[in-house]
Image (tube, rainbow, N blue to C red; front, top):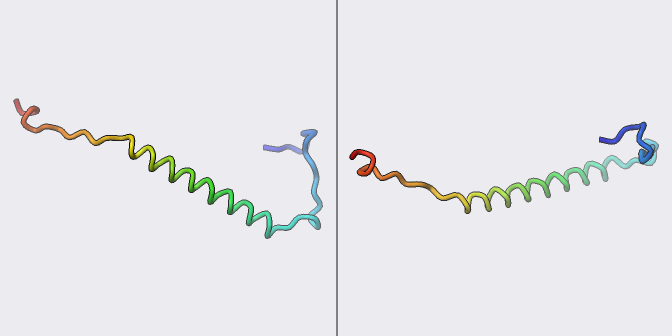
Length: 60
């Protein structure tokens, strides 16, 4: 997280800030994160195999 005390911090006037562009950028980033997460979940699901229990082996 950026801090005002950080030397890299740059102040931007509210007049120079375009909220529409900022929110559009944030929405794009969130969409990319959701897509990447969905791809990772799909890949993980392919790697997991269901273990079928043998009832006959368990009874004896």
